[in-house]
View 1 (cartoon, rainbow, N blue to C red):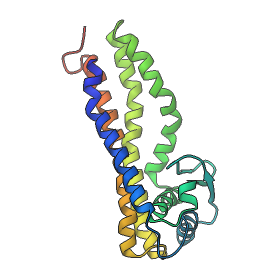
View 2: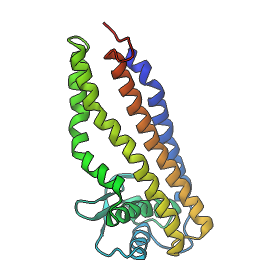
View 3: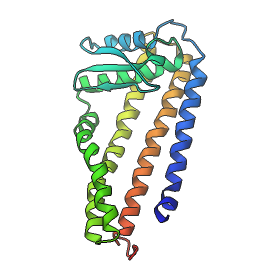
View 4: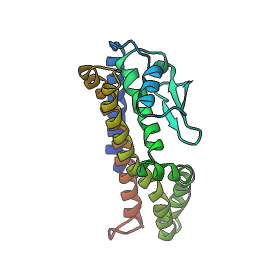
Length: 225
C-alpha cells in the first residue's frame, strides 16, 4: 500500500501523458500535408536529404509502434503512419528518421542507450526479485535491488536527450527537405512534443520508484522494519 501511494503521482503523470499524445496525434491525423507525402515517403526524403541511403523502411503492426532498429538499419512505421498523408504521420515518421540520422552520425547518447537496452530487459525484473524478498529478509537485498534498478533509471534518463534531439532534427529537416511548410511543421511538431511528455513521465516514474527503494533501504535514515 505504501508503494502504491508513493508511486501514484508518477502513475497519474504517465496516464495523462499517454492520453495527451493520443489526443494530439488524433487531432493532426485529420490534417493532411500540402506535399501529399505519406509517412514512409517523408521519412525516405528526410534520410536522403541527410545523405543516408542504406536504411530500409518497413511497415509494422500496432498503433504508434514506430521505431528505428539500429542493429539492422531499419525504420519500422505503424500502418497509421506508413500509409497516411497526415501531419501526425509525417511528424512521427520524420522523428524516427531522426534516430537513423543519429545512428549514421554516431550520436553518443543513442550509442549509450543502445548498449543499455539488453541490460534493461534483464535488470528491470531482477530488481524486483531482489527488492520484494528483501522487504522481509534484509536491507542488503533491498540495496542490491536498488543498484540493479539503477540501470533502468539510467536508461530512462539517457532516453530524454535521444528523443529530444531526434525531434529537433525532424522539425528542422522536414522543412528544409520540403516535406512540410514552416506552419505545418509547427503542427507536426506538436505531436512530437506530446510524445516527449511520455518519456518525461517514464523518467519521473523510474526516479520515484528508485527513491522508494532507497527509502526502504534506509538511505534516508528510515525504511520499514
